[in-house]
Image (cartoon, rainbow, N blue to C red):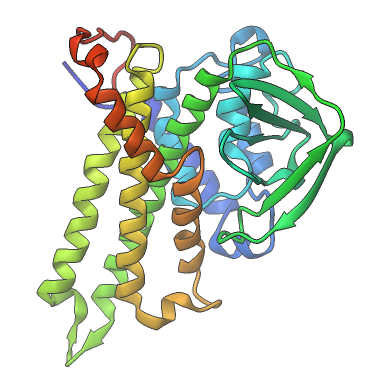
Length: 327
């Protein structure tokens, strides 16, 4: 059986990569709130998961995982996961959602602040297992301090909201897996930056990349990323099975740990310069930390995973078969 991504899935990722390299360079992270948004919309990116009757392509989440990794690798600002992944499960009937003309934010349970709420035309608020939507005119928000300058946080208030009929759980799981895919992309870019800098930075007359201790740290990051990525792919395949929550937590925890390890090692390799305002690395460091806390922290997902695999019901349950395309 072939567990690799097919040509169409890889071609989509390559196209998104090219668009982001052109329209979301590191310089754009300093000045633009939604760089490359219009270009991605032109590709149909925001309609990939929408059904055909809503002007979408009706793809599965696994089909777009490589493309989502590219958005993480580019440190793309804006509520990309919320608009392209969460919204299709809850707001598929909203006109112009597929075109990217409607920007959607999400306030998940357990989080006090909503990321990118200032950009949201619609804000999905999930509390007590139910989802409600708040329209822009009814939304009030105040900025709150966060670690990621390209993913600002806001305290939101609203007087009116509308209940959404679709269950919130499946949509949040999709958002969790999509965020894990972005974390894999962030980790890959941090590793690439650390390796490149280790080749040119010298100490004692030699590149620091030739030192055994540095090699070991970089190898640890590479191993963590390669272990996390298949868990993310599996989680996307089992979203409609009994293992969905368990696999989503395993994916988010592993991807979060890989990204935070990549951030720590990249910072150590770069030294004090890694903290500076002038170095673009700071955006990827901040994105690793902010996405690790989004849709549940690593610790919370580790606890959910532990509970899932130690309950008698899980141990007695036969392994569910999966169908469809496999990465």
